[in-house]
Length: 188
Image 1: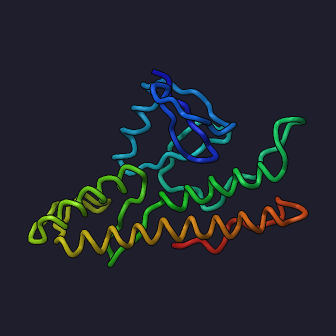
Image 2 (image 1 turned 135 degrees about the vertical axis):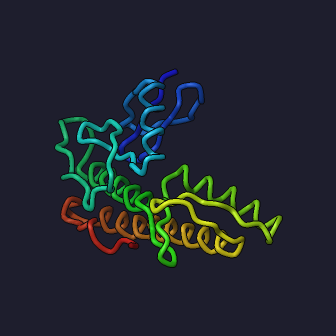
């Protein structure tokens, strides 16, 4: 199986799923490469777009996106490049993790899925305590803590999308899309 990756969305698109449309910047990687990237995520690394648009690993997401790519004639507009850089910045912030009541919480796609499952589990059994692995090791979390953490992660994700939407509007309205500062104002 071939897996496609888009730097602009920070998402993987397996070839065994029929997508109605794919981003214009997809690159192909092997299933083995994809599995290796996913395995490293459990070691605390983050998958981020490399300079060549291929997925790579980072211990900490970059604080600022790379310079806007140089556009080849016919390959897209400066607006497309600015919006792609903005999407990459949002994804890096969104998946970069947060601190909730002193507890480091991963916010990558896998962690968000696991946290949603934990939330659903404790909503059905509010006396349940779950052992959860963090960057600092295992902790016991009550149902109340799981709900609070998942709510904080959801709020963080929404704040990232809100910031991207605001900056997208500025980029779309700018005479020079590259002049819009996309490095500040993100949730921490």
